[in-house]
Length: 530
Image (cartoon, rainbow, N blue to C red; front, side, top):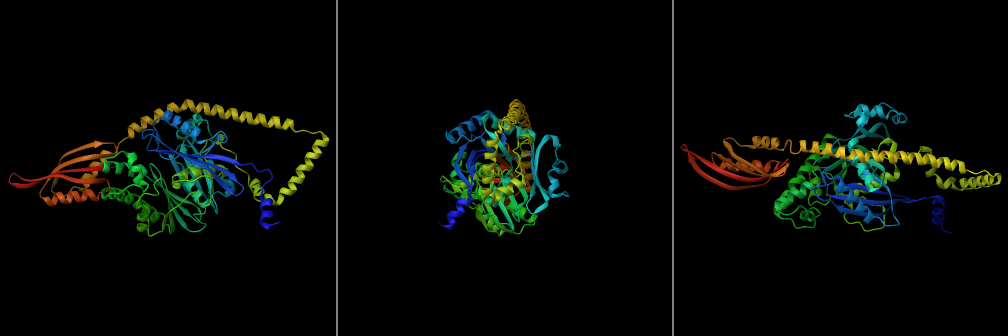
């Protein structure tokens, strides 16, 4: 018999049961789901799926129409799953406002951190501790350094209310920095030593995560995502947003004006990535680009040229077993990472404490790791015990009944909690809408006037200003007068150099006299973005 075959037989657990889970990433434009099962060799990707959302269901990471969202997720999950794979366990993500994550030093020893979790959170979270769901994670190899994550309870309950209506069972609610840091460590793209950077472009934001010696180090949330690119291209080309998607994927034709728009948005992200590397004191060995926007034309090259660090697109499924062909795998990075963390039951978990799965004890983990060594002895012991109990007529039915009653009580408590979440959902949605209405476009006009004041050349005056479009990004018509054509040229140059203006065009100019002085009238059209 071959030695490799003997090792394979010995390594196979006798009582192994496959575990399955769904990783669900609900973004502003897409719902993404990945079905993963745990195997003896690692993880097997059964299926991936993607569904586009209407533009007004989720705006800037906030749910505007939870009824429509529930209906879309429900129908999508039913289409995604088959009769043989009705998985209920699901891993979820949270991000946006009222969500916090940071790495801090603590004076507590590793064995004390779990017991002192509330004290650590209270000292580092800028919210009332009773208003948040929080968790901590000790970094491997750094026993005095802890990652703290927190989110407002209203946000967590809103997510759980939606999942309850979809008839799924939440196992973990995690955060993008932890998910991606763990995923790219597990798939081997980030080694144990050195400084590495993950740049993940999602729909409404870009996540920049630094990894030092294999563990999470720091995080930057950049409020420029794929949606900004799509809207800029759509306005530039006068086309619907959906028609701009192929350009982002590198499949559409790129005109000179589109290239300029792409370069402008690329430059915005590159500048913040470069500043983050400098501020964090990183000696980056490699930058991994992932997410929906990983294939944006010129982005990888721009980051590499600006930082002088190798930048490559990282495949989240590398080294994993997959049963299907996955197109544009970077789209599923967060959903896949969520599924992995859900199966491993590790990382931060922002589920309410009473709903979290119990973490495996270290002793159990150790026994699992050395399973092939003690499986034979344990099997013999179990068979001997069964023989003795059978001979003595001793049954364990009473214990089983008691265990089932305990489980029944736990299930009923969770059902009562989820029913209460449904009642709170409408109230939470109303509060979110009120806050969103108050904050919508709150500072855009102030920023516009401040930027115009900053870049306006000497002896140049504005006589007319009008806008057309949205709250944070809109078209402008600017009229004014200046002392000469040189003043007009200088103003045009300053508008083009500003990070807030794009598509600058001089539509009218006229030279005349006023009170014996020669003046130049001008008219400029441009687009302002906050």
